Image: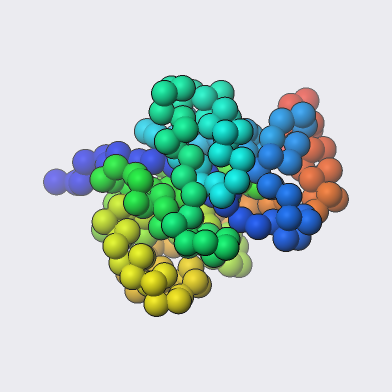
Length: 217
């Protein structure tokens, strides 16, 4: 008998320092007139049972974006969670915060600067994780792992806290302490387009305009 579909929470990772963009809060950078985070939340909302945002600044603004994405107003503030470690310790710290706050089930993580997340990404990763009886599913493109796009079983939270407490910060090193399945998204290379410079922001804006016009290949 197959494992029943578990509760799945999507965590938007917006807690980074964004040093390559001059230290701005990247999730709030405008893309086609809206914050980057709003574009990603729009794609995550129909894929997940619940939404969280990992942010270390501008919590009120992210709560407003969650409300716009359909999170009830009385829950939105609590759905914005900061790192438990100080000084911007990286994506694993955000994942640890998400695992500490999500319900028993699965936690899907996604960066705030990747506006072209596929509409079926979470479903594909969940299917792969359950079929392999894995603890972690991680996306990959044709060449590389994309570890910030991951699906984690919530019971891994304590182990991740221990790993971070030992001074470790490398995502893949922690992943491969567990049962991992790699999920091939080489058919969706645009999924991993991220925005770190003004030129990349402009290119993403042009792509969005093309998609809106229906001229995309």
